[in-house]
Length: 239
Image 1 (tube, rainbow, N blue to C red):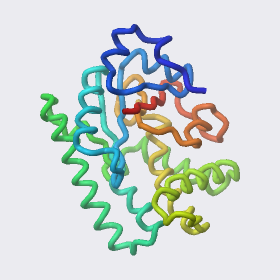
Image 2 (cartoon, rainbow, N blue to C red):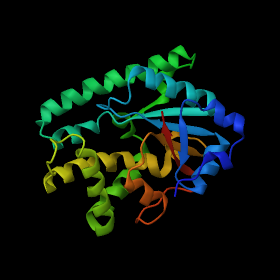
Image 3 (cartoon, rainbow, N blue to C red):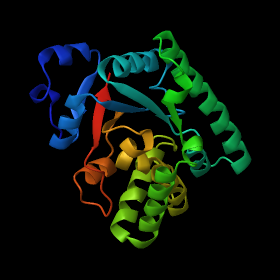
């Protein structure tokens, strides 16, 4: 059940968060969000929600409200979604790379205009994270669970369907093969939902996004085989 930040934050803090509506996923997430130590803001490629003005607003909010902030850009992971909807591998790689750079530029421009030093270091790309030991460890664990735990696999495939339903023609149901490909996107994101503090080298963190798919509700309600670290939270940030 979503918990309002109004019970955890002074009214002045809520006012400063405008124009965003903040909804922590659990009471624990609310406590982490209230301390304002670190935010990891998810920015999706190929999603019209993240236009330049929206990204600038999110950057201003995160930099102003939190002691530290990073922006997660799943650039290389977008290949899986593109392949799932029918793009050949080479074409998917090209489009993902081009769009990833485009979104990266939007984020760093917004941060630079806010006076953030070294804005490139504030962007966590999925391509770069493959070299991070903790990210790699968690990603491998997720892959193993996908292969061995039926409930976890079902939840991942359902999340893949949630992503594809907005990209396939109306009335078209994804095939099993498409769901398997699309689930690789989620598995690549999962380490950021489990342990951003270790990946970003901070004491605690909330992952921030404008939607909350059912998979994340299950994850933070601890009904799946893997669970977030105690210092990991999730915050829905809606415009």
